[in-house]
Length: 545
Ligand code: C2O
Image 1: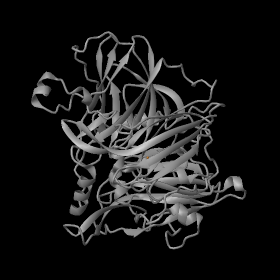
Image 2: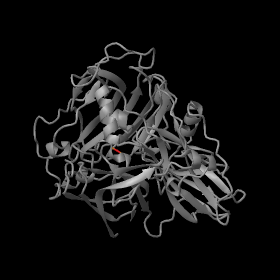
Image 3: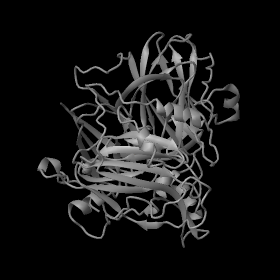
Image 4: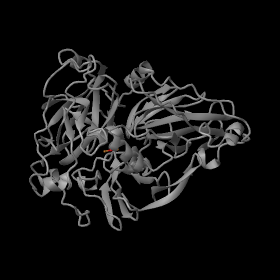
């Protein structure tokens, strides 16, 4: 095992996309940011120095951080932000994990430009459980706004409305040729080089693509014209391989696919476009990149892939049902079979009064009708040092009033109750959590991230979860194991996990909009009996509050 050291300088840099130059917050002046490379078993040390005028905090999305919430990163949950002119060294061990994860800012909407890949290679001498690819490439999907994102978000909040959506989707920070920024360039089908990502392949070779959805608010379809994709890993967990012409990836998720350059040598479009099957307006801006066979001149124009329609629910359900853990003796799926606690959380949108907002109301989102309120100091500190009155541990196990969750839209009594309420969990207890979308205001799809753990997605369905019938259909043999799970529009998702990691672990919708509106909560997992099952002490340089 080695120690991998990185220096992350948070700095503002001028970057231009769609012919709109603007200052953005970056790591080391790069957009997307640098990739962290490590091997299973390594220790990683990332010293973050903040030279920007914003507070900063970085999350290592998908790393379990056993006993080590201090390095997890969500602002005001496990640490206070790194202030301008200050540094914090995130130090963590990579134990029992290998594959593709990613890192991103976990404060305000700064992850719009502050994100990058984490690539963890398997231990020396341990091959992938699939044919060794010839080469690999990171494909990070994102969003781009022509104006300053924080300004846009604040304007939306003032009006009590969602902020204006992004101007483009991006692949490795670039929107591609379908987003021409001037009429002349559009006619020539020739965007500036800085706007298009291209990857070169050799005929006959197989490539591993590490696809990451860093978009703020959209689940995305991703495909390559005429080339099949073989899914081999999701959220850094190996899957039973299957072949598909497109993948679906929710915000926060990662998917590794193998692609063979087995078509007529040429140029092919790589494309990503939102999946949106709710009543909300469809945003169908397509980001493109180019897959180019070696020796093919640039003048040959690429052909577009067939992506599923933006509202293709059937494709989404079918694709999701194919995701299975590899579940071999070497990589077993250790699904908890005996459950200590059953939780049922409803996901709702709402509207609370807001004296400072233009029309006197603001949009909110809630779990079991509770809208999460960010504390002023880190919850992990409050827990570790026994500081009272920062949070309560009475988060309810079920909604206050059962109703027909996915029936006719409910537009009365939309007020939610505000609070920093957590759910206390005994060490090592097994949990089943059903996340139920509701038609409060409107049904919508979600993407739930649980920090500190991987969990198994044992079931999912459309409509109301039926506790009498649905559990019988759960997959308890080889369900997908992940760190971020989609909840279908007007449906539910059931997950199971073992609370074997002491600390305070955030759970939230990875759609930035919903997170900002309060679609969050946290679990406090108590220490176990021994020191090896207890929180580590905080590092000396942990940012003060
Ligand atoms: Cu990418 Cu709180 O997570």
